[in-house]
Each structure stands twice: as structure tokens, then as C-alpha cells.
Amino acid sequence: RSRAEAPREYLQRVLVKTTGTEPEARTLTGLFEEARFSTHPIPERLRGLALSALSSLRARLGAAETG
Image (cartoon, rainbow, N blue to C red; front, side, top):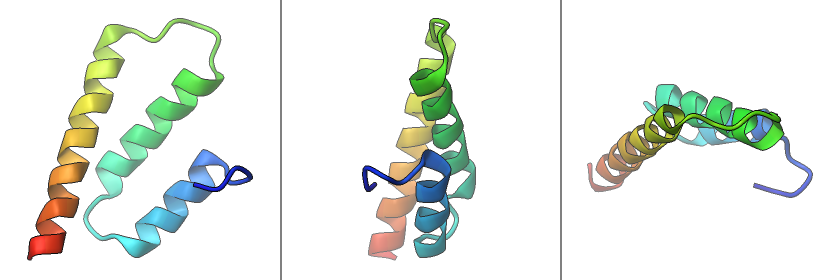
């Protein structure tokens, strides 16, 4: 992502280039925004949700590269 690009701008650019990744990408973007811009501590369950979404996204992208 470029330094001037906002998280949702980056999300839109990524979604144009990939297919089938929207749920995970939106989840990660929302969690990133909350972690980056909020003032409250991020609960451990949200960290787990982010890791799960990232794992799923990586699997989808890996399958797309081989398939």
C-alpha cells in the first residue's frame, strides 16, 4: 500500500485484482482500522479473528495461484 493510500482505498484496489477474497479482505481492513485508529485496547478475540481471516485469505490466494 502506498503511504498516501487509506486502508479502504487499498482494499478497493486489491479487490479489483483478486476474486473470492472480499469477506476476508474486508474483515482485515476493518480490524486494521480499529487497531490503528482507536484509543481503546484491542481484545484478544479480535486478534484471533484477524489471524483467522489472514490465514483464510492466504489459502484462497494460494489456491488461485495454483488453480
